[in-house]
Image (cartoon, rainbow, N blue to C red; front, side):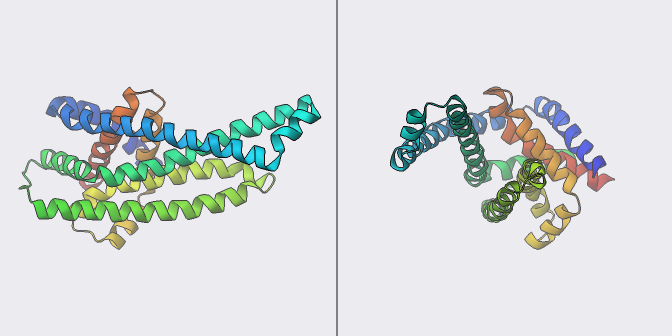
Amino acid sequence: MLKELIIAIQSFVEAHAFIRRERLWRWILVPGIIYTLLFLVGGYFFLHSFESAYEWFSLKTGLAAWVRKDRSGLLGALFVFAGIFLWLLAFVLYFSFFKYFFLIVGSPVFAYLSEKTEAILEGKDFPFSLSQLLHDVARGIRIALRNGLWQTVYMVALFLISLIPVAGWIAPLIALFVECYYYGFSMLDYSLERARMSAPESIDYIGRHKGLAIGNGMLFYGMHLVPVLGWVLAPAYSVIAATLSLHKIKKA
């Protein structure tokens, strides 16, 4: 698994050189800018709605009035800390579900980018087929919905585990790996579908190469630490890096 993690990380570095060499910037920047705009606009409305819901809950339950009336510094600090924690949790949930929304919306571009990358690597051309593209898009949407459902199940279970003292401390770390795995899974599946693997075969294959999926997802999230530029580049870099990493495994 460690070897596969290293391959996934190396593939992200190589993806940059690959994009420059093959002049793929228009296929990187256009969907990346759309992704960033949707991310910002969706985040604004989601967090604004969350703030309204939080204020409504505080007023209806009398929690805010009780804290003000008590005038305890420690209680007020705890209330503020709890609010910040809820804000962070809400943002993480938003980001988790948003990426699946964009995987569905961006399926045509991701399928094309993966196919074009493999065509260049293999030195052969894949004739454009609208029916095949639509099939790839439908497969990508099904996989995204399937992964989103399973990730939600695991996240609920991890949330319950996090309530257990001591044992719950590791839950956030496991949640991070789950997030990374399922995102990388979606990126890798575009190449596996072209290899004529069925969905169950793809699930089994990626299950045996978890390092590729986790590494791809980790770099995707890591790029979001660079505001705007990282957000623009992250989606397309992920799908190209996933194709490069599977190509290495196939050659090995």
